[in-house]
Image (cartoon, rainbow, N blue to C red; front, top):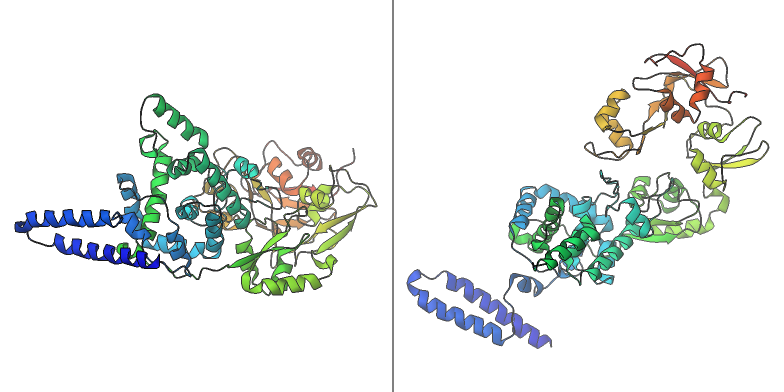
Length: 518
């Protein structure tokens, strides 16, 4: 078998060289060249050799110890010459730094993506889909509320088992979302009889949109391939974008593109940790930089694994055994830094959440509370980030060395980063950094943004059970009530003697830690 392959490859090489040499002959030898061309085709046919570009690519010898080389060996979608592909190809070639950047971003995730693609029998080209969807950015978020490497929208994410809650977003979990995306693509391939261009179009535009376009063409006796369908312009560009990128990777040397060498071996291990664990504690146990763990576990929104799971962390492969050993030796009660809070008479969950700089929903989930009802004398477990104040009294602040708190801003109709930054007297760059989004990101209605403000804008009042809040540009009573987990009606009652029809920047209002008696 090997001898047969070597003979075929030798003939292929000979024919290719002979053909190139033949093309250089002068026009006076055209008749002779045609005869030679005929003999070349006949010899290739008799030897069972396909001289198409994709066949020549497939007969290449690949270094399977390199991730990119191994991936290219899995390419299975025939190369097509089309103006839309050429347009995308020209863009990539005009931006070689971008091609280099997506290779760098892909490094931590590439082995796992290739493994999932290969195990499910998908064309290797699909492993490049995160480059088109998100630029291989795990925190990417779109105007359609799609998130993660594979840009799942909330509904499709939930359909494929990706939980989305206060603690965790499975769409950003690079391990879970890759498994979900490859399963989804496999299903789409089956629906469209392994026509991968239609499957890719469906991943972008939806199965219904593509299905209707196919039925329309079939009913009118028209071709039903991707290139013949009437599809949204975004989708008509989307598929060629992936095909162009795959063509560049498959022919990198021809296009002058450098493929970075990457050893084809796991970069992380998915470790079952059994119960909730603080990410900073995991960094200590694995002797890993916390930033590296965050990069591998972008689905964790609060610095903890969720109380109800998934109880899994991605740990750098060279630190995984150390982590498992140290985790096994760690006392259970040290997995998370908790504050045990005894509920006092008159307290409510909003007050307690403010005190520990956390959210009501988070306290309810940790303590399995069905609603906001609590009783004096009972205890609550409060997860507290390391370095956060844990005193059982309202945090007192000073103007020196301000600490940042994290009020939340809900996006309203017409909002963008620039308009929000102007409302809050902040820079749009800061808001983008705090929320790990791009400056030009399109925000969705109701989206929650973290807005960090120095706590020295909150001055202790004479009454230690309340604070004085200085109104900022763009503030409203509703926005302030959201920041402090209190009711607008309470704010009005506490400030009945000073509140006018409108709030003014610089005005101070009282925010009490205890609700008014009714």
